[in-house]
Image (cartoon, rainbow, N blue to C red; front, side):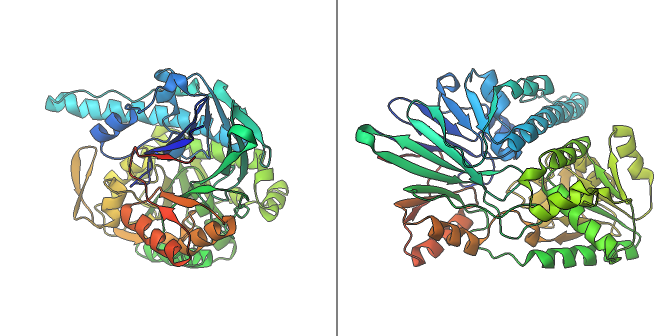
Length: 465
């Protein structure tokens, strides 16, 4: 029997993760991520499939970040009928994330079309709507960590804690062949780090033949997470001293909660002044509630503190912004403050409006706490372009840009190598989810450790047996 894997997305880039396993009997998709980038290119990629969605037997979802789950509504629009398997935390988070994604796409399309009408340009269509995203919820089936489950006639899977975000999974896929033989494939996209706040450490599956491994930071080493806290303190204090605002574009899921965690610690230590901290996202409030509901997925210390109402989300300085009117009101508030808003790569959401209103003021700061993919507004800010385009209008980038990479929830070069070594012996490691230079750097590092590896190209199909 032929077992193949096709690398459909998240190859040569960090967005749009999606990989198809096919046998003579089954087709199973690992993740269905949203490709993020330029509008026209994104729409084209997200609506073009190299397989028939109707023929999928299962979709196995590693975690609830939009670059891994965000294109599920499009698959359903194109005829996908199968179940979606994930942990219970991923299921609940993905429902929120997808509903919000549909809402943001509607709002963004409406805003852009308003400008396009004025300029006589063609109108755009949302990839999917909030209503279409809501249809996804009934497709989920939750599977606990460590439980072997049948996804298709000849394909089984087991979830292990990836330590990346709440409920995230390393997936061990077992493909049954003739005469009782099996092919074992590990899927660690995305993989977390050890000793992160809130989360448990990643778990390494055993008995694998192949491993699909992210390489986002395959050529880099992260500073200790404690250094991120120190840099956060310095950035906040420096900006407050010049009476500015600190804008933090952050993924609403996990990174926002992690930043709140460290700000709460700094406030308790009196290392920063008690300025208002605004989380401008109704979604963030709902996600934070899920952290309490799924406390069994968190590390023991955090779970214990939350049960005592002493957790990081109880700070008196913390305020969640719910309405657009409240969000707009922050523009007229000239006090020093911290504003955390999505999206993490500055491609959509309320952070765009805050950047539009604050990016030209030198007293303000933009604090980058996560990865910014190529061709995104976030990457242009990281590269400190003199002018950046927001809602079709150029703005001069005068605000201070501060990048803290050590907040990353992704494993670095050494951690990725250690994971591959712990999973060995392996026939081959496939490196995905990164810019090309990072994948090559990790490939070189694995070669030094005598671990066979390969960097697939987009849409490439590889025979596993």
